[in-house]
Length: 400
Image (tube, rainbow, N blue to C red; front, side, top):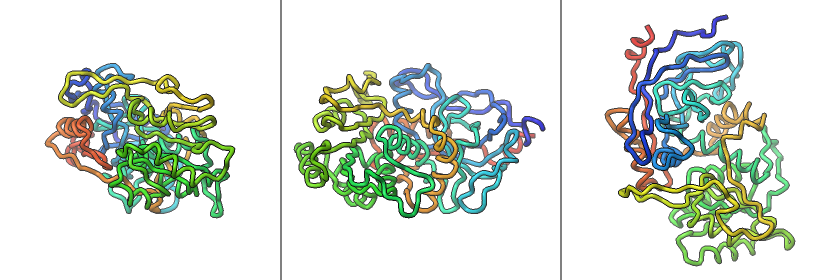
């Protein structure tokens, strides 16, 4: 069998890359890889820019410029590699069947340039791709993958919560009644965390966010919502948690998820809340110093959670590293291929609201989305934009 069981891809395509710290993005023409064994090629139609894109562009976080950005992918398969045709793949709208050209998928890819989202053509292993449910638009679906995966990895690997799959109909987790604090609950990760915790039966969840999101967050699963803008927020959290507490021997709040990772605005207050035996999971990087949008000053980041605050003795504080989720065999095989499409199809998780970013070119749309992140103009929504401008005729011309 040949390595490629579909038309050969064009030799080159366009990708959005960083050019320097806080510098304008650029559109580069790069070589197109061909899908290998168990891989697919996707014409990326939609993506959602992330805070990591901003950190990599403005602060050169763990990158060397030029760096292709993006980890959100949603589009049709345009080529498949060897063995794809013989592997049944979960279909949220029917029986499992092999992935094939024309199927729309959504995915989180990050490990190499070929998997990055801000480019015309993305090459992925099949285990990173979920079929797009018919009841969800591509622009909505692309808000899920990176943060959906982050939540499953964090809750299971960092906070040690039970998330069985398939979930038994009568499942009740052993820690169902333990208090879980989600700081930044109206963020993308926070909203998915609330919905997934609710579905799995974790009922004592305290959400910390702007009070304007209270109704939405309670609908998603929060038992109580604390306004982080309130000067008495920490005291209020303690009062609410004391009323919910079920054990006098355990810490008041045993499980804490920080979806913000700001040294001053989330880590520091959480260090005042966490007690001996509290388990704290903080999304990395920790933002040590922000960079104002109109300033040449560069941001500063940290990766050492223990050094980011003065934690009480006996507190377990961990940095979340989503990119290691593939070390869990179940998540590698099922998380993006089956669990994500199923929970989206069934309405267990609702996509984040989208702000569709318009522009004449891929570069213009990417730059506008970066500006929205830099200016902190997004409130409970994602900057979603069309990636590839190739239409059907253009695609056919490039592959013939």
